[in-house]
Image 1 (cartoon, rainbow, N blue to C red):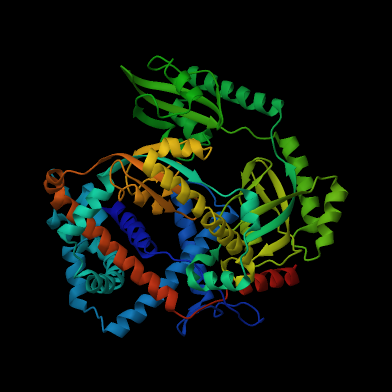
Image 2: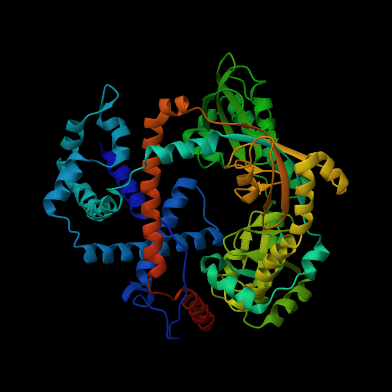
Length: 608
C-alpha cells in the first residue's frame, strides 16, 4: 500500500492541472524588479502572483520530465508555463462563479466524497481490487489507516475534492436540462448517412479576375467587425541563427560500436549478466533501470533495423551491435514462442568523442561570451564573423518548434516569444545536434489582431468572393442550357468539361466542391435528375444530381438510444466548454507575462 501514496499524489496533481485550457490575453505592468509578490495577472480584479504561477509551472515541468524520462527544452517549458497560466486564470474565474452562484461545499460532503467516491483511477488499482473488481472496503480501510494519515493522503484527497465538488455542482447546473429530440437525432443521423452523387461544372475566377475585384476599406472594416473572433493569431517572428555542430564523426560512430562489442564480450564471458550491464550502461532511460527489459510481443513494435535483428535471434542469443536512428544496440532474445519474442537491449547513443566534444564546448563558450544575452544586434553579427559562422534567417511561429537546417530545434520559438525585444540575442541553446544563438530580427505579437494587421488578408477574402459573384451571369446561362439540353451539352457549349463527385455525405469534405458549403447543400436539395446552381466563396457551381441514397429510418430506430446517450453527453460537454469560453471572453484579464519576462532579462543582464 505504500506505493499507493506516491501514486495517489501523482493522480491528484494531474487532476489539479488537467482541466479546460484556454488562450492567453495581454496586459501591462510597471518596470519595477520582479519579486515573489509581483502580480502576473489580474482576473476581474483578483490577483495571480508570479510566485504562484512559477510554482505551478515547475510542478508541471517536473511531472512531465518524470513521465518522459528526459529534460524539457525551452519550447516545452514555455508551453507548460502557458498551461499553468491558463489553469490559474480558469480557477480564478470558477471561484468567482462559485461566489456569484452561492455554491458551497461542506466538510461532510468532502468527507463523504473521498470515502465513497474515489478518483476514477483508483478503481483500476490492483491494491483495491478483489477478484479483479474494485473493492470499496479495501479502499476505505486504507484511506482511514495510520499509514494514509502519516503520509497525508487524506489531506491531499480533501484538497482535491474541495476543488472538484464546487466544479461538479456548477457543471451540473449548466447541463441539467440538456436534451435532444428525436427529430434532431434523426436529422444528425441523416447528415452522416444520406449520400449524393453529382455531375457539375465549377466556374472559378482567375488570379487576374480576383486581383481586379474592387473592395473598399469600409467593406473590409465591416467584415472585420462582423467576425471579431476570427482575428486571433499566433505570434510570428523572423530570427537569425548561428550554430556549432555536435554531430559525431565516423570515428565516433565506430568507437561506440567497439564499446558495445566490449560489453558483449563481458556478458558472453560470464563476468556480468546482460541485466546488470544494461542497468549500468544503457542510455534507454525507460528499459535501462529494468535491466533492458522490452517486454514480450509480436512484430511491429520496433523500427525495422532493430526488429530484423531481434527476430533473427534464437532464445538466449545476443546480437552483434545493431545500428538504428537511436544509436547502437545489443539485443538479447530471452524467450521465443512462435512469432512472439521477449527482448532486452542495451542502448548507447552516438556522440562526439571526449576530445571533439571538449573542442566544441570551448567554441560554444567562446560564442556565448561574444553575444549571449546581448541587447545590441551588432554583437550577434560580430560573433558570427569572429567565429566564421554562417548566419541563417528563418521564420518562427508561436507554439511551434522551429525548423533549422531541416530539423526541429527546441528553444528558438520559446526565446522569440518570451518577452525579448527585436535585436536581442538568446542565451546559449543546445541539443544533441549542436549549440545555437538566436537573434530576433522582427516580431509580431500574437493574440487578437488590429484591423490594420489583418486588413490585407480580409481584402483578399472579399476579392475572391466578389470575383466569384461576378461569374453568376455566365453560370446562369449554363444552367438555362442544362435545363433544356442536359449539363454535358451545356458544358461543352461553354467550353467546359463536367466533373463527377460522390457519393458523399453532407458533413464530409468533397473534392471539387468543398466542405459544408452551399454547393454541398444544393446536392441534397435539387431533385434527382434535376439541375441547379450554388455560389460559394470561391466558385459558382452548376450541377445535376445523378443519384441520392437516403438513410434508413429503421436503422436509425435500432441505434437511437445509444445515439441519444452519446449526443446528450457531447452536448453537455459543449455547453460547459462554451460557458467557460464565455467566462474567459467577457472577463477583464490583465496579462503581464511578456513585460515580466522582459524585466527578468534586464535583471539578469544587470546581474551579469
